[in-house]
Length: 117
Image (cartoon, rainbow, N blue to C red; front, side):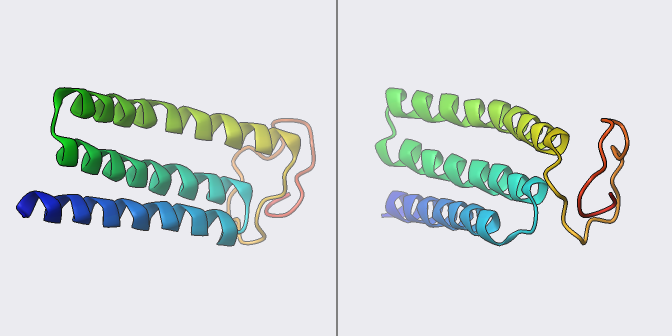
């Protein structure tokens, strides 16, 4: 009974954070902020869902698979987000009009559209 309650809470929490990540991709104003929402909330949501899998099945294979997957997400998501953000910035994807500070302005030899450019 308690095991089912823990699994349900983990799944609901994970689903909520995955939903927030998807909503962030749809609603946020520019690629850098969208990328941030998708990596942070998406990684947390997927991690909670894999934790629910480990608690529900409670065998060595499921727990190992869940731990390895969560570690993989925690290691690769920031690197992928950095690469996507840097590529978008270098390609000249416009920043939001609400962007207050562009520390990389003028470093790549192009005039930025939107934001501080």
